[in-house]
Image 1 (cartoon, rainbow, N blue to C red):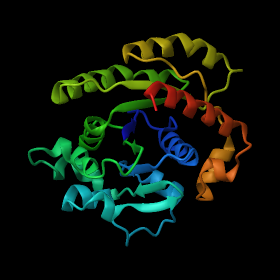
Image 2 (cartoon, helix red, strand yellow):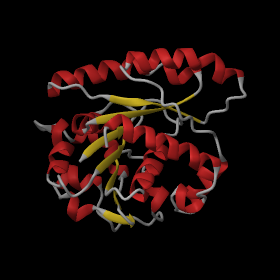
Image 3 (tube, rainbow, N blue to C red):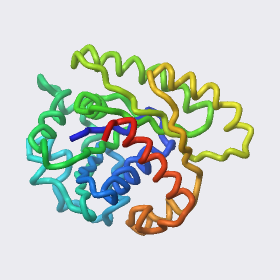
Image 4 (cartoon, helix red, strand yellow):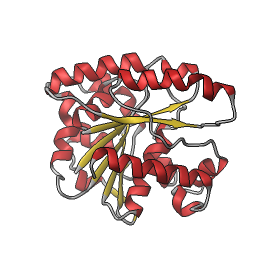
Length: 255
């Protein structure tokens, strides 16, 4: 079982979309996948479920009440289960202060070892207790990044945090790669920032994925329709972009 955090401390870079499409693509290939919405904004949950989720157990119940993943997970398609997010996790940094608070998610995931091939975690755009729990539980990280100068600013801080996690866990968290999203090869910005993005990847000890994810309205349409991209529009060019990325991801993670 491989556990993967999708992370970037900058919002609006396609982090949630990447988590959703990666999970759906792996499930389509026959892998058993658990998707965890660890962002209190719950955008990932809304990609798959209607807004009426109040009666469902959530990631908050795992952190706050010690519920098991098996009791909380919701099936959303063949081979794909979801742990829904919860706005109550906005207060996680204040609420969860007990010893071992950074390993709560790792402990919960350990109890389902063997049930899934992949666990994909969508993290919030900050480096608080929820992100740290995800990092400590994970075997790999994928960093989505839109092609703009602001996306480069958080890489150094992310690197420092990963160094701290390595000290805490006594093991490195490999970054499988930086995934360029909302990409348009015809713009000067994309060309000008390529070199800087390669430098950012080097800082994280990784490489930029060869497949770029173009900007496409069909991605938002699929989310509104509560369908994964491959079911909603399997022939879209952006779906081909993601299929290429998933193949690269599998190769880099040795799956």
